[in-house]
Length: 186
Image (tube, rainbow, N blue to C red):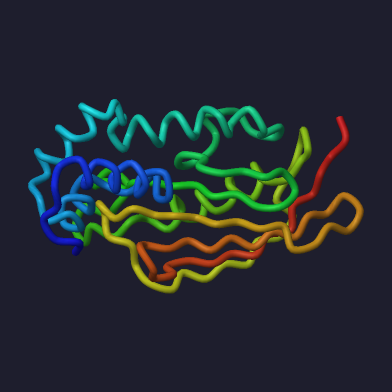
């Protein structure tokens, strides 16, 4: 926590912090600066900084144009960063609809789909299929948690792409998957 600061200094630091971490929440900023959430919202409004959902949507729209193999609605989560044939990052805010009613644990197929769609989005191919998937669920994800997936192409052999995807909740890894994706010529 940085402690109470004059408004002008706080706003300057707020701009820098959002540049470095565009997906920081108002709650996290409020805690960091030691001010109310409402003060953070007023600062953002005054500085013309959009709310978190709008910042995510803007970044996702810019990145989606780089994806060849999937349509915008086929990517599970928001595509935050992509460098074709190298790496990518996506974000998914889970909710109760994704979890089991009784335990609130997010169903595994949603987590797998997030990882698989990120892996497919990363590779620079018009048509791609998952040939092999090796996955491990490490810790249960509870509805309401924010998932951050990071994928990386580790090897390319002919038309086969070897992609590793790790999904975290904050700093804790909850899933990892190794995919072999096959690019198919049209």
